[in-house]
Length: 338
Image 1 (spheres, one colour):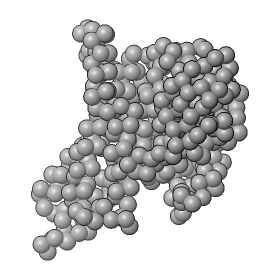
Image 2: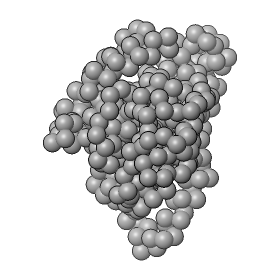
Image 3: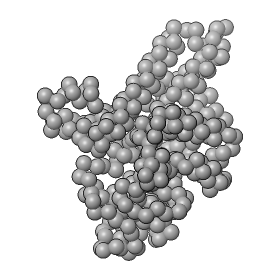
């Protein structure tokens, strides 16, 4: 897919998400159908298989809009789920597909018993795909679940747990030992994080310009300008690292080299979240937490995504192990050419 086509897709989604009331929680099915009509779930699927033939960088641009608008719909997860089905060779299924970022259980033949945890919008999904310990894929119908625990993160985004007992499943034994479900999940989240950080910066900058304090705009004070400058640096650094990670996966696939870039981008995004959200709420004061002000819709999501799929310690340890395995001779190459 050409870059111009990817831009058109992202722009179409941005216009749709800007419609008032589109993502209201009372009508999830209707809102999702509007988004699904854009055909985004085929973004990563090759053109010869009926998809757009897009790249992870294209998904980043789509998720940038999802994060910027604090959209509660599982756009990235649905794209990831459809792509996983395609590479696993599963036949397509109707309805919303989601991803289980934690899959534990036992498979006997074509029957599965176990638990799918951390499933975005699992309560609304028609089917769910997860990754086995050997890097293969397993897909289940949500209607076969024995129970669904409706759980949510700090931002009230659904992160459900589904329990299955001896139900039929689709499996793919062509596992990729280098693949990790949390790495694919991070690639989905990086665009959202960058979008939410950018929106929070724009909101905070506008507030500093319009808020009058001691007879002058808040943004005219040097200390405030310094905070906004650091805020902008963090947003830019996180975005650059995220784009580099997506470009690395497009170029190398899920190898150790791209694993390095993903881990580095996640750590850099987490650092930016800490600095940026602190600055945003300090400059807004109590206003930032009020129900009618949208800043907290962004920052609560950022705080949730910071620890989702592994916290700072988890990714720092993984990055350290990767550096140690690759050796000192490749350190500079990894830093500048991922």
